[in-house]
Length: 88
Image (cartoon, rainbow, N blue to C red):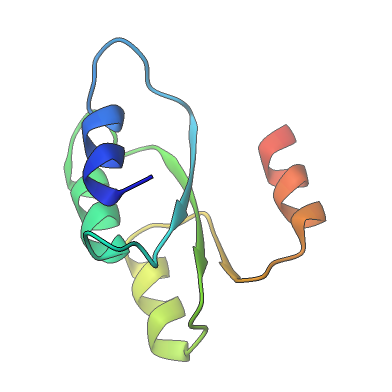
């Protein structure tokens, strides 16, 4: 639900998913800060991250790609593409 919850959940040792679907538009913390933290943390560095964002400017997309996202989607997105990524 929040960026801080995402960070707490993703850094637990008990369970780490292989894929994270991250909304960059969170209320409590910048989604880029969450993404940066996950990519700088050894335990989550190789996690595949699919990002959704309201903004689809070249700068936003480029920043997300530079931080290592697997896919970038503008909200609302075509969820057929998302299902194909999850199935992989």
